[in-house]
Length: 274
Image (cartoon, rainbow, N blue to C red; front, side):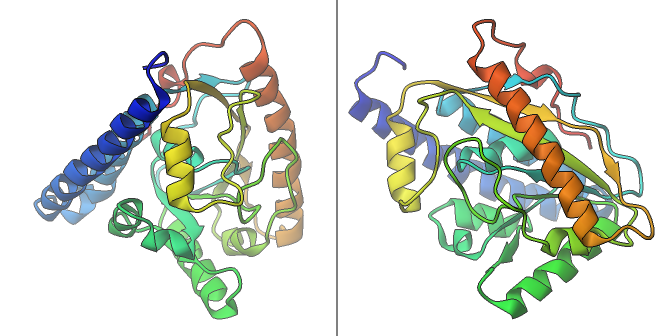
């Protein structure tokens, strides 16, 4: 598809996106209704991995492993807060494919075509950062999920940015993590130079159209050492440690994605744990 006319490539990818999401979503809903409650999270993680993997292949995004660690297995009964820098809508598929669990997302995503319906169906935590009531509700929801031993992914910069600079993290998720004994897993993401994957100053449909016509791209994902949230730690300290870790991991991911020797595909190390 890399040598295909960009307009034809765009049409095929958007059609494929709609077909994949429109087919898997009702199939998941039906299967979930027939699955015992205790097994539904594992079912959802498998569905999310399948959906994410299909979209990455459809849009010709190759995920390579940076010089970090494999995705850590979940510790039974202990929640995981995944924190990463945010550059593209592709980050969502990467995180769900790698870790499963629940996403924390900007509130307007709930209304995006197809993606919004899928996000609502799998329990995405939506937050409007300009609304203090929405922010407080999101913190409570994240805390409940972490206390319940679930995995929650958040992009604490609050929105997408171009480049590798990691902006200051919003405090909400780190406040939610206090007293939960969860693990914070820092993650660094870097797209190959010139990929154009950044989602900045455009609508979702404009971004989808642009990415659908783009040539293949590579993205490196580097996973850091877990930070265990112990009693007595302050939210600001946890936020600063997580930010410093993500900054270092982004540098590692940048080195991995731009070097001549491509690292092994990440699918060998990022199978979602269930």
